[in-house]
Length: 233
Image (tube, rainbow, N blue to C red; front, side):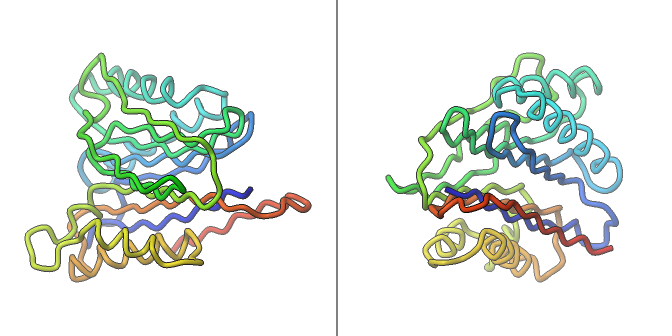
């Protein structure tokens, strides 16, 4: 099988830096994790905050920590760093080859949509952001690994896009993208982000991130791994 990941992000209109951060981390016993962090506020301060949290999470994952431990640790880290006065939302999407499972961890009110061979799921129960409570329990869900599985995570800038207009972003648009066959994760991420931008008339009122992780059934062959990054500045 093969794991493919696509990420698309954009900052708030007329603000130089995005307060949303994304990191893709290789797990030491096999697999990948996508860490999505939305820092409180906008601009440079929010960017610095989200970068600190995503870097902490990535370091723990790289050291072999399980996702539940990572979520609790970054909560303790931010709580100690900012005295419980600043929050972040965190979502971790993981394909754990050691446990042969798909893991979704959330301290966020943003949904995660999963297209799985046994049916689609939307994880949308409200969860407390990290950093504001000393004791904070993440939502963690597990599925067995199967090919033709796709997982989509977002930040609230996407979900709330155009919410006060007739063109509001809808999860129906996400399901519509999932129903189209033979799309790469990057194409799906770009399409969903474009839907959100259209809802905001291409002047986003908040930072936006879309991350898509897909598991496909292919011959491993030589096991060549590739990464492509686009970074406009």
